[in-house]
Length: 154
Image 1 (cartoon, one colour):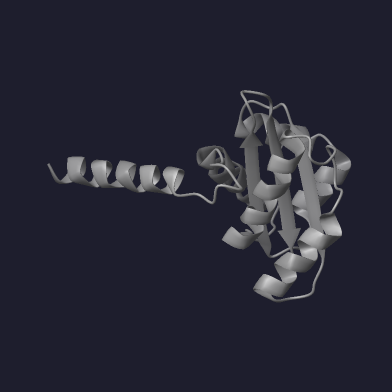
Image 2 (tube, one colour):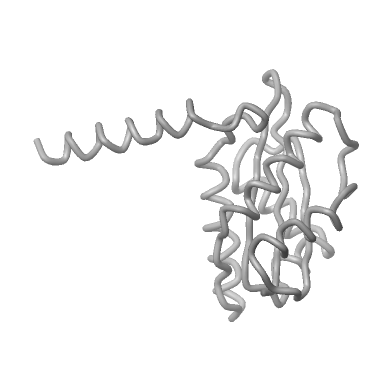
């Protein structure tokens, strides 16, 4: 009975989260985001690098960019990256290095991670000397999922 109550409570928490999001940034595929962060940290650990700490504000900025790309408000790519980093750094502090990975069309966390690792520039960001990470995924009208991943050194 206790396990059932915990499961129902968890599902209620997820439902509240899904339906109370800022209307300007629709609900992201939260499970995929969490899985990507786990995969990044597993990979970093396998090559002797420290894990990255996820910060929700970085993920927020990532979700906004993913949404803008998915809806065609900006081109697929890194337009506005400098502004995103400035907002992040003013919100969380720090002034170190930063990097960004974007992707679209992958159907799972594993697939997008493999895509990034098979690209030297994206892999360099994943392996970089950063301390924090955020990830945002967004799908518009059953189209492809767009992903943005930002790395920050505080």
